[in-house]
Image (tube, rainbow, N blue to C red; front, side):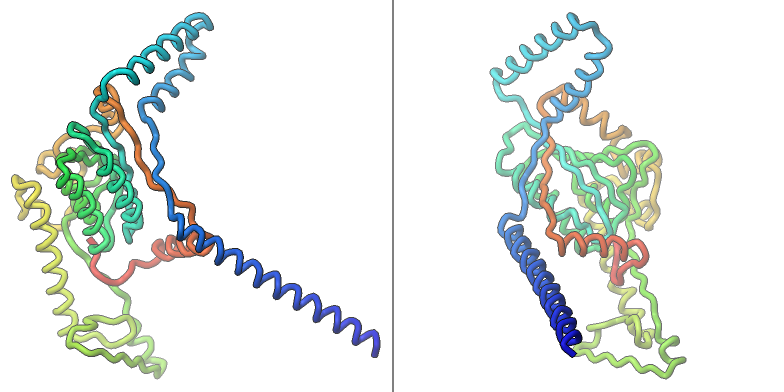
Length: 333
């Protein structure tokens, strides 16, 4: 009996200890999350000119003999000092936007643009390296609106597309003064899509009822589990047509020479075809454009960086996995 009591007491102590450890860990996570919320992130700035020079210097160190390399470094140092003492030249700011279905990068884009507008001078410009196959209309509409802040501030904006700017991605590109694409980039897809699975017949076959209550005739047009009606489907199509019209109008206002009946069909084209249609203004890679900007002046890459809390990292990873297997309901650009 005493042996049982002692073993039970030991088990109870271990259990209590484990519970306390779990509570302590949760408390630490909560505290760290709140600290991060108070300090959400920082703007990081990279001197692209120096980055290119450093890469070349590493090659020169092996290509040249030691005396020649030392002489080159002295020359480079003198050139940098002269540039620092010279009058300020126009600056080009480089931004990156890699889009997912939810345009998650729009939060960072907002902070980056705000920082640029704080310091930009007449003659400065912005380069946007854009990669996105599109996604949720409201999120990409917000991203495009952020880019319009640059145009409103009279900062020339060039969108550079190396691989894809389709649907919501092209909506963003259309906000730029100039669009440059690589020859085989995927461009366009000015259209809207909504798709949703329906399990009504599967539930019905198992005698499972799905009850849904709404106030407002069109609060819910189609549903995943309930029985969809022809009226609900027609209303959803009407909403998609309205969004598509707004999408076409947005692009047409900024690229007046486009034949919207030809390019606003939801089709996507390769960069070389997009140039012929007027969807882009030139063919080049972002590397070409950035190097040319470095020769004309200073190029600074601006990025908003925030270390995610543990719950956020778990959420982002879970969301990425979910996006990979299921497209969310609602209109997608």
